[in-house]
Length: 227
Image 1 (cartoon, rainbow, N blue to C red):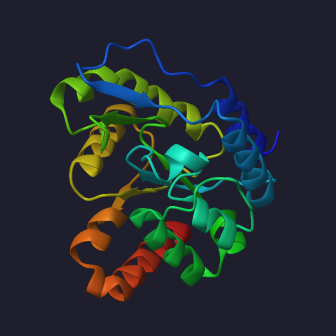
Image 2: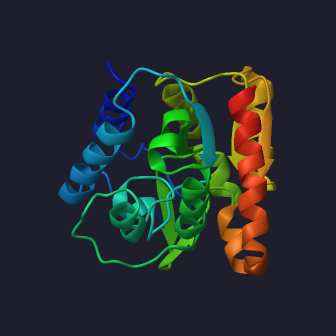
């Protein structure tokens, strides 16, 4: 079974776990939508149709305008079509993190080169909304406690797709990195965890230095690739 088919099999069987969420919180679950399933199959079979292991790059959880629509981490409908070459019927609304990540993908040499070496994923495969807003899994202490076992299961299960265990890259130097490092210390999943600022932080607070941050990402990715 190829890397692509392992990914697709995982998301085909994935359902929101039977976990009581804090009041007002809802799961963001795009994987039962026909267009999402269609473009995911095209994307993963285009870029992951082999058995090569990849270095894992972890985000937080899907957001409403990126993976919460397309099913592909850090990929909004615009980037999916313009950069991934996959036309889609989604509303072409941009997403900040996707804009930055795909700048990095292009700077690395394009999607064929990038995805040959790296697997973009997230500590949680499902996102959350509350009162119409994106929510990160760590934004609420009750939510973090509730999804902890699901988060650990997700990382271990996705690593079986074909993870290089020498190191992983965490997108986010704060709470996301803290959670991943704690889990890694408890379970010995990777030899080392590298981290860079989250794309959303860069685009929201330091956009003028975007070229600098693209270079920082490239350095981290090359370090990950060479270990």
